[in-house]
Length: 236
Image (cartoon, rainbow, N blue to C red; front, side, top):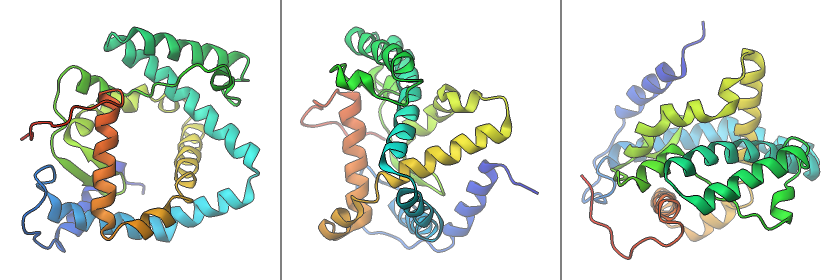
C-alpha cells in the first residue's frame, strides 16, 4: 500500500521530532532551528543513501547533451509558470521576456529541449506564486525544513499548493507518465548540485547555517529582482 506524500512527510516529521535538541539563541529568522536541524539531518541521510547515488549514476551514464536537453525541457515548463506569475505581479518586462522565451524555445527549440532564447539574449526571469506573494507584500515568515522536501519559508509553504498546480507536469493525465517525469525532474535537479557540494563542504563550518543563509538570500533576491534592501524588518 502506498501512502500519500503528505502522510510520509508527517510520519518522518514525527520520527525526527523525537530527536530534537534545543538550540540556544536560534537565528530570529529560524525560530524552529532545533527541529529544523533534526529534519535537515534526516533529509541529508536520505539524500546520501538514495538521491545522491541515483543523481551521480544519472550524470555518469547520460551524455552531457542529453542532460542539457532534459534540463532545458523542464526549465521551459518553469518559464510557462513564470509567465503567469509575472502577469499577476504586473511585471511587464519580465512578462514579455518570459513569453518570448516560451515561444522561441517551444517552437524553434524543439519543445524546449534547446535553449534558443538564451542564445538570442532573451533574459530568464524565474517566478513562482511564492515570489508573486512576496511582490504583493506578503512577508517570507520563518524558515522551516520539511521532511523529504527540504528548505522552505512559511510563505512558500502557503504558496506550495498553487505552485504545484502551476507545474505542468502535474497536469499530465497518465499517472505513470506524470510520476516518471517528476522523478526525472528531481534527479536532474539534484545532479546539477553535485559539483557544488565540495565547495559548500569546504567553505562552511556549519552546513546547515550556510545552506539556510544562502537559501533565504536567494529568496529575497528573487522577490527584489536581485536588489534587496539593505535591511528588512524581522517578521513574526
